[in-house]
Length: 237
Image 1 (tube, rainbow, N blue to C red):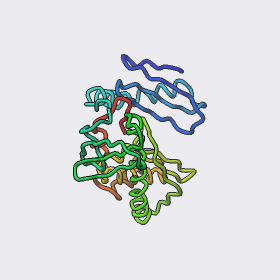
Image 2: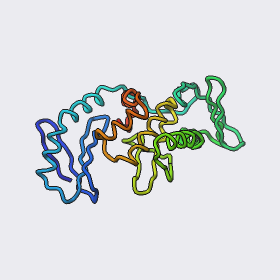
Image 3: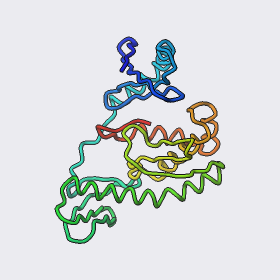
Image 4: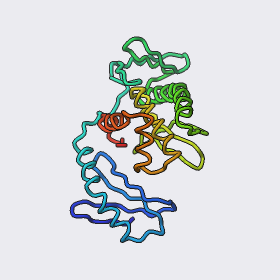
């Protein structure tokens, strides 16, 4: 792996079989990486890095000072979130199938057998994934009507560095499992964000114009997500 030194900032450079350069700043330390097409010279990559230096430093500072969630233990009365609302966990061991039940401000997790932290986490994440897949189609259909963009496939998965991603060629979008914890308006913003990327790949003026047209408050949602509490392994978007 190559490195570029820009004063006190080190940028990792990885050459891949891709069409465009991408720049990422990873929490919690602000590590910087550029993925570049194999055909680009080192000089071109360096000029690109220099042009983005102020953006890099801004995001590094934001990530280094951002509050982070402590590791989860998945025990009774631990706080967990669903669609932006805080719930207190109640873990129940029994012989019935695994399930999650919301009761007012309590999130009950019924675990078949021994409720270790790992098994309890798996039950909760399975429930998060299922609930997201129930919610997402409504918003896909809404924004397909309004934007004219068609989504051929949508999936939910864990992602360390992005709230969502997409493949223009396949017409597919992926949404981060962590969005199950956020207010539904934030989930809708990410859905639209990725759908617009199916039309315009880059974060350029064309992309911004589409977002302004369809969701004028999109910058607010973006900033709120970026200010959200992060786990040690998580991301900024």
